[in-house]
Structure formats: structure tokens, C-alpha cells
Image 1 (cartoon, rainbow, N blue to C red):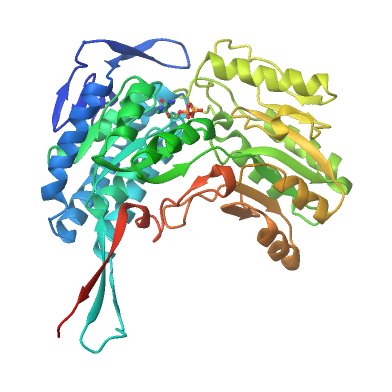
Image 2 (image 1 turned 90 degrees about the vertical axis):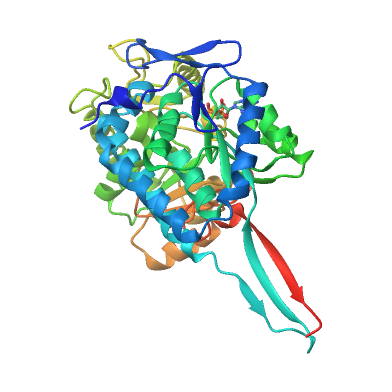
Length: 482
Ligand code: ADP
């Protein structure tokens, strides 16, 4: 069995080789649970990114020409290698990201599932033949890889967010230059180790750690990059969209959310509590589909809060490496400060703390899982993503009101609601302006279904049979003179 340290690389992966930054500068990576140093990765910039792009462009010439079967085989081998090393990759992930080992193992399994899915989809890139309006011509539509892909990924799912991009890119026949978040670069560099292990040709997968603006600037400006795929905040997504406009690149954006979680008075309250705990506190509340606002119908309001607060108190805070821990640390000190601001703002405006409400006795970046009631629309979490273990509960009276509150945001990624009324299930799901809707379920992500947001939560979908579309161009070929 391999060790986590066997996947740790302190170099960037460019054109199949491990190299330093040109000026040898580095970024220090720490374990958010105790601040200990895990290692140093290169602080690369535009020059190294340009080399990686050129390598990817060169590799594209041959990689786009190999058979779909061969690409599928490489991806299948990669999925197998991920699962063979699940424990080591999970431990590496927990050390740099903080989530409990069980969640990290789940994320690594999810990475393998995405890669496996796209191994299967690689062989199904069908085109069309279209009945021609001319007797002497035929019409064929092919789907071809877009070319070099620039991928920028966040720290909350440092492995699986790359799987969602590497999988479809390679399945389509594209090559890729990826820039991970500086907090969690090792889980991304591990993809370079996997690529080597399974014999992915040099230049097909490149991983560059470093200065976000410099690397992102080069990825968006360089005309050799034909597509930008990004997962992260809406603010950075907008910057990348603007930058990518100058060379008219294809774009996919998985941006922020502000997920409502509605509990109607006909819901199974036990199930709703279970779903809310999972949807709120997974990864210490640091996922873009995490519940941000819980809306509970008046007549069951107090009953729900009592059960939800009791379940919240059962969560165990600690280092993700420790057995039985359900809630790890926040990613950095800024995240802790921001969470405290959300809390202070709400309490000043009349919210009541039911449980939690302060930094955890463990100190550092640990925060108590917190439940607030009497939340109102003027509190900052009504509009902004909390990204931490703080659950505000709002009260509502009618179905119309719940839908209005839920949609009153510029975001549109995930929404959840609990009801046992079939008519209501259809009415509400159709009116929610969200890309993902969970009815009586709090965790709904799977590689077989399309993941992506409406409104300012994004553009495009990842996973599912639609997940390849953004990596392919349609080419219409007309054959005349027949
Ligand atoms: P989060 O809130 O998840 O940290 P960010 O949007 O700040 O979200 O970060 C997501 C990814 O975007 C990270 O890899 C980060 O380094 C990168 N990033 C941040 N700012 C820029 C930028 N100006 N250009 C390109 N990438 C950026």
C-alpha cells in the first residue's frame, strides 16, 4: 500500500517533467488543522505557464489523433490507479485541506468515478448526418476537441474538481494546463504522478502552481488556449470571463452559490434534519452546494429547530485525521474571520444563537457548528455565501413566499426542499431558478448527472452525458458534386 508522501511532489509538472519555478521561488503549504508545514511548491508565473501551454499545444497534435479506444483505456487505467491509491490520496488531501478522512476518501472515489465515466463517454462522441436539401450534396456533422484547455480549480475539492476537468478534456482529445489553488496544490500535483504511472503522454496533462494572477493571466491571454474551465468564486469567474473575451475562448464556469433549503410543514422532519446536516456541514460548510439559508414553515419551525440543533451538537470537531471527527478546520484564518463577521452581523441585527456561536475550544481554525434562528433578509448571509459551519434559519408562511425568498439572489446553483406532497414537489422544483434541485435529499452530486448553475452561478455543466459538450466543437462538413 502506498503512503501519502509518495504522491507529494514539490515541483510543477510540465511536458512530462517535474521542474522548479524559473526563479526558484516557492509557496509554503500548511496543514489547516495545526498550521504545520507540509512542504513548498513552486511559485510559478507567466513564463512557466507559457511553456506548459506550448507543451500542451504540441501534445495536442498527436493526442487528438489517437483513437477514442486508446484514450478511454488511459482514462480507465487512471481511474483504477486512483482507487488503488485511495487511502494515500485521501490522506494527502486531508493533510492540506482539512476535511475528515472519510470525506476525503469519498472525494477520491468521486474523482475515480468522474474519470471512469468520461472513459466510457470517450467512445460515444457521436456526430450527425443530416438529410440534405440538395440532391448532389451530403451533410455531416463531426465533434472535434476544442484544443488546449486552461483549468483553474479551488481548494475545497482539490482532487475531484480537477477530475471533472481532466476527465472530459482527455476523453474529447484535448490537452490541459491546470492551476490549482495555492492552499491545496498537492492533490493537484498528484494527478501528475497518476499521469506518469498510467503512461499518459508528456504534455497532455500539465500542472502549474503559483501566482494566481500571473498564471491565470497567461492562461486567459494566450491564443493557444482555446477553452477556460474554472471552479471558484463568482468574483474571480467574472475576471476570467473578461480576460478570456479578448481571445474569444470557450468558457465553463462553476461559480458561487447561495443554496436555499426549504422545509415545508408536510415534510418528514427527521429526514429533513438529516438532509440539512449533510447539506450544511459537509466539509465544514465549505462547498458551493452547501446550504446557505434554511427556510422552515411556521407551524413546524420550533420542532425543526429543536431536532436540528440536537443533531448539530452531535458533530465532532477536530483534525480530519482523527477517528470519529465529522467537522474539520476552516481552510485559513481569513475564512475564520469572515465567518465571525457573518455571525456578528446577524446577532447585531437580531438573530439568536441556538447552539455554537464561537470559535472552538481547540483554537486555530476550528469553529463550533452553529445554528442561528430569527434570520432575516437584511443579514449578510441572505445574499452572500457563508462557506463555513453556520446554519441560519429563516421562517416562512406560504409556498409562494418560500419560492420568492429562495429565488431572491443573483446565484442559482443548488436548492433543496423537503415535502411529501407530490404536487408541491413538481410546482416548487419547476419554479426554483437553480441548476440542481434536491427534493427530500441533501447530497445529490453524482458523475452521471449534470452539475452547474444558473444566473451568476455559472455557465456550462460538468459530468453526465452533457459534460463533454464544452470540450468539443461542432464541425459541419458539406460534400458536394456527388
Ligand atoms: P475561493 O473562494 O474558493 O478561494 P477563488 O475564486 O478565490 O475562490 O479561487 C479559486 C481559484 O481561482 C484558485 O485556484 C485561485 O488561486 C484562483 N484565482 C484567484 N484569483 C485569480 C485571478 N485573478 N486569476 C486567476 N485565477 C485566480
